[in-house]
Amino acid sequence: MARTDGDDARTGGSDGSDRSEPSLVRSVDRAVTALEVVAARGEVGITELAEELGVHKSTASRLVAALTRRGMLEQLGDRGRVALGFGVVRLAASATGRMDIARLGQPTCQQLAEVVGETVNLAIHDGEAAINVAQEFGSASVTTQNWVGRRTPLHATSAGKVLLAYMSDAERRTFLRRRLPRFTDATITEAAELRTELARVVDEGHARSFEELEVGLHAVAVPVRGAAGDVVAALSAAGPAYRLPRRRARAIVPDLRSAAEDLSTRLGWLGSPT
Image (cartoon, rainbow, N blue to C red):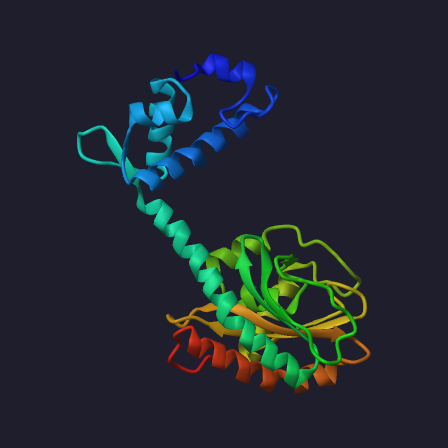
């Protein structure tokens, strides 16, 4: 027999969690479980879902209504049954796109790292930060620090500047209204100065970060385009300042552009990314 909501509050959620578990966490767990149940069955009725979740039918109905409003579920006519909605498809497409970039970008990172001898990263825009999705170490790399999955500030990294420079005007304006944290004495923290820097990035087709994130760390990055021609990622090379001085950082830009062009082509871009 299904537990009542009162029983659930006293003894914990349907996953056996502690009775002190916050109700918000239980709600999220129920929502995810509901989506998994619908995905497994194709379609499901409110009564079936309530039994599966161990809650009252009224609770299941409210949960379905909330997920339907967000496009995660959709009602199937007047039969009282629901199926996955297109909101789930949008989320899946976003995740698939990221995985495709990471999968296709790994060989590019490896080849570029062999050419320039430095650590090469591929980053995408992730909310208020950049997130590294692929990485390879060059023969001259003196560190094996793993940056994959790490979120880095947009305004203080070469990859982040590329992503900022090519995002929509509205997104960029919103970002520039925020406080820009300082990481080193070289970090750009004034919106007007960063705006000028981003204009230069677009004009020259690459971004630089000279000790703006970490003292002694230099990096340079170029844009990677997707099938529609929009910038979907940034390809960067980074190394210690003593081995990647400003002059050499600028000198390897053509290598980065060539690698980015190859990756852009594999992502479906038929034009010239530069």
